[in-house]
Length: 313
Image (tube, rainbow, N blue to C red; front, side, top):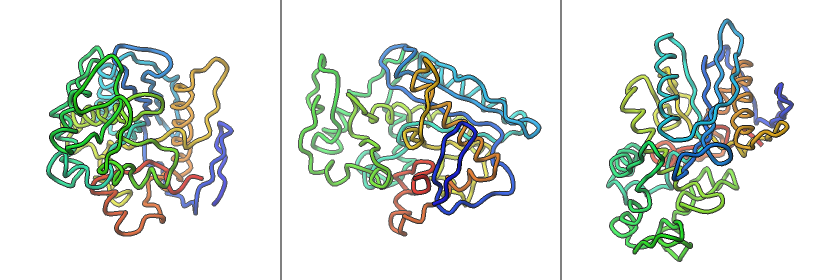
């Protein structure tokens, strides 16, 4: 592995680096997502860092803090529309799982394909402008109807659900598909089945996927979801590329009095945009050598991947 130092002072060990002849993107949006149940700012809320390339120079904006998921999607949608109007290519990274472990989609949607799962979640999830959602009711139904056992777990203690429990209980199905391949190769990424409490990502995934499906329906052929629709880097054709990120993979340095969530989006933005300026970002989007053929097919068909997993040490 080769160590690469970027201008933020962060050192990354990138396996067998190779360089593109030009930057892949003109605009970068890095999003720290949130499953908050009411409008919220500060820690554990939504932060977005943005950078825009003009005349071979990067204009990096101070991260913004938005109180609701609706406000975040409005900001992202406007940024994408403006970029398309100006002929710019955009990378959007969001820090929640884009897929579930192999075979999950068939249980929930009837088909072993990520797009079928996204469509089902989009139809089932309600998430209003005040961050109030029905996600616990939805997965309570999923546990009963599709799984027949408590695969999803975790919810606020003041509520009671017949088929969703506040604590993790035994589930043969969940144990058989607890983690995606990427989470096994890139610890300590969390399981999508946990919906609440420290480190939980399940709620973010449910609410995030539902919102991204709306974005897909809006931008249609102008947008691709990595690596599902791009086959890693084989078909990076659309002007908008949306990808799953995991900021904890990267060394984060907080400035004085800077909230960690803000520091994470800022650091990842600076890292990705600088690597792309130097022609090295494509490596992080490429298919890792660690995937065998069976795993590769599962990742592209259903599970998804994290940008840089398998390449960054």
